[in-house]
Length: 444
Image (cartoon, rainbow, N blue to C red; front, side, top):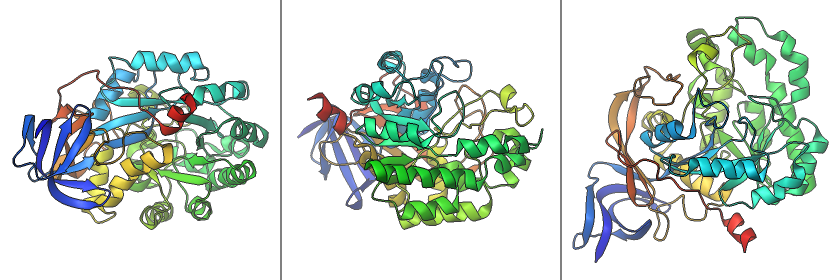
């Protein structure tokens, strides 16, 4: 038997469990899993002592192109993703101009060709004015779904009223993703911002702003009979609501909310710890971890959102919200695995099997014969310190500078080819648009 590539002797994490075995790759796909001691291949990768995970998917990133390329762009941030062991990203619509028409979505897909090192998909952004376009946009190849901002964040996309949210849900067929903060409450509380005091960020964007929005959203999802994906949950109270809403809602959490806590992070990082929804106190982080391990959480993503140092150093509230994260996802979370906060199997569920199920990925998300040969190869015992020099986001900084990681990405393999190997990019610009089952069905 002959293969294009054989991954030899690694500890392979599959839906059925973990086993030390070989993987044979032909073309872009997994052809065989098992003993390949008698087989030949164009390339043999010795993975002895390493773990081969299904390719990690980051289903929430902001790569800032078009319009804000001075702080990030599709090429630089995709390279950062590949260096961190990420094989695919879903990019958000709050660019300038916003991704609110089929033409703008196609423009992003065109910009990605030949420039993005990792596979990719783009969200369609919902507004009051483009609801009639959303059914067309969600059918486009390379569209991962519709994104709705119920509370204002970076950019000017916003649907704050129940009538608008209901109209979006009624118009579309696929699962919609939501930034769930109550804009009406945020408007009332912006006056509570204390100039230069980033800790007042969690006063302005308080627990009730998140909880009231998510409560409204769940009611509207049930009323319309539609599926929703609630992004970056940050509160204990929301997890109580979402635990009883698995019929309509899938749930995302971020490494930032699982790793950083208030008030420490604001004292230490100041504006560099500011994001929406905010990093909160320990009791909320404890609740998020309980939800992760209880199975309430479906997806782990980063909300990678770069800003320049100059922007982040402005006094609050002039400082913008958002942190990078796509490159640090794997080492930060593997450190939590090594510290006993979650199992390796659960990490895989949250970063590959979860996105595959929630978004309906056609051929990604698991190590199984016939699927894309996407692998995140990691050394679970390798100890490294995350530094700003290692982080290659164009913004030039990371909130995890100095973080002592145990567990490190060693190779990123996408559709059967090395993109990152031993910390170096070895294949540039080969990323392709991700395929989704519902999009393929709609196209028939």
